[in-house]
Length: 246
Image (tube, rainbow, N blue to C red):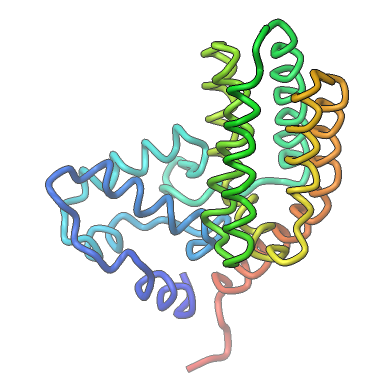
């Protein structure tokens, strides 16, 4: 790892001491650094450095990394250790198109529900939270509220496998969503879609709601691909050997 990466890594919010409930605490701390791009795509997660940073033993560090591997945020490569998952463009496209289809399927399932008024009210509350976060340029709050907006419909159907699948998918693409939101918090068109989806569900226009769900994915995907490409390129540059330097 280059000196630049080491400086960023050690100067980050990893500079805290872990409490007694170590593995889950470490999982959340490292997750946050992956999501916000402090630890970039493809960057190694060196157990010794994490161990020193948190003042804990290697065993809980490794357990935390295994938990992150299950969520898809971290990849383990034999004889090389853990690193932040590095996606190809094709993999990102597949993840986002799967998201679009699952969300559309969720909306179609809502057609079987007699009373959507509680869901519509919940969606409006999340839409208000998105608006408030964007006004404050709070990227974390914005993506958290939008995640809950899209999960609300799945929970309302009572379809636990669908809800679990979407939750895991959202977790896997959280760093991508953060990259996009960070770049476009001022110009983001998310609310055009969330408000449209809410209005469509209020009048039980499920086809319209499903079309808006897909439409948002199609609109944001190029921006996500570009933002991720730039982040991965920067990470590779930071980790490259600096030949010719003292």
